Image (cartoon, one colour):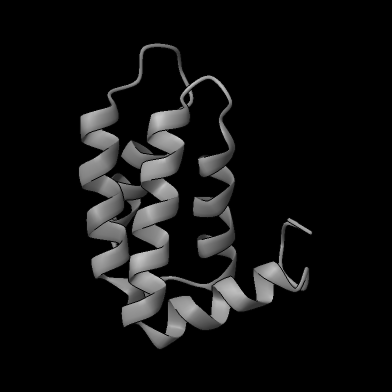
Length: 92
């Protein structure tokens, strides 16, 4: 539980000068432990992919989320709800 919180804290770094390589590894760990991800978690990850000032990283997040959704039913279902506008955030 503490490890998951630490990984999330690394991924959701908000301050200036954040470490993209650390965030990349944190995302990889989060998506690999998808059984602990909720629909809101998937929505929060998707929101991180909307940074207009870091488009390369945003595209990376989208690609990893898409790949994870193809492999994992839990993430796929959460992403589907997100696309339909039934989740925490609306992208439609």
